[in-house]
Image 1 (cartoon, chains in turn green, yellow):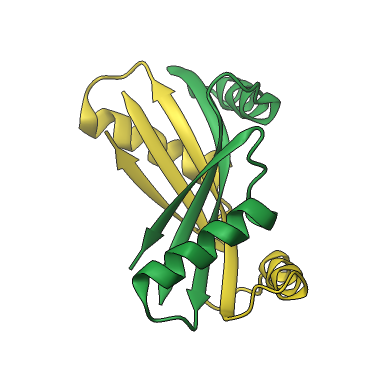
Image 2 (tube, rainbow over the protein chains, first blue to last red):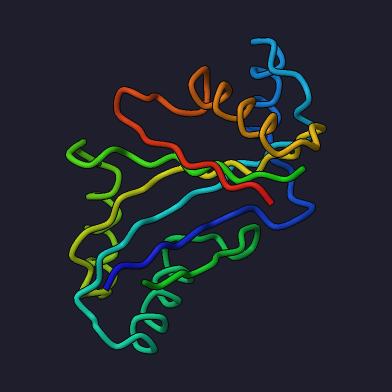
Length: 79
Length: 79
């Protein structure tokens, strides 16, 4: 089963990387960007075929390693 | 207008970061992961309100800075 896990910073958490990218885009002449925030995406192939079990396993992986839940949110899409 | 740009490695491009994450997950007891590939996601706020213009601008940003199109694919979702 394939899954995509998207990890993004929580609202209110500063994103200096995003600010740097916005600055670089402005420097390259790409105006009109009012905000940009960078996150991570993980495309995962699982041996598990049951959707509920796969989701539970992915949640455990997010809590353990893929996301820092103090400052990041994660979203799991199966399919 | 809000947009999400997802940048992923092209098929066939080695992903040592993904391999390291898979190894770390296995070391933490999370079995059953057959493959994992890491990508980037950018959540962008644009001043532009026209969808076609916004998409064209985002494509230009991807080609210029956000993606390395030699080894990466990008996908633009507006909404």
